[in-house]
Length: 50
Image (cartoon, rainbow, N blue to C red; front, side):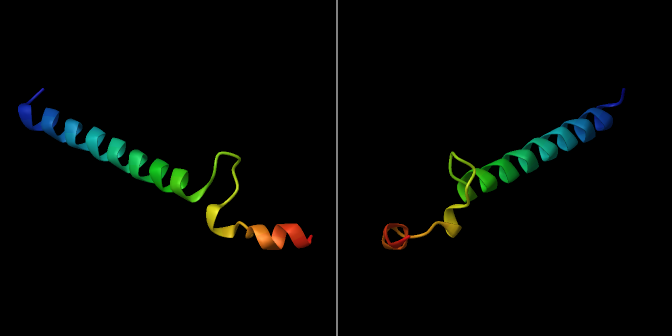
């Protein structure tokens, strides 16, 4: 296998890994541990009135 093919495969694997990490971190920051969206949470005052 030529050296260029090895570099190409390495670059593709690295790109796939980086894409996976970016998407995973995006969803970790957007949702809490219980699977609810952080930006859609009600404030404490709204929860007390219901």
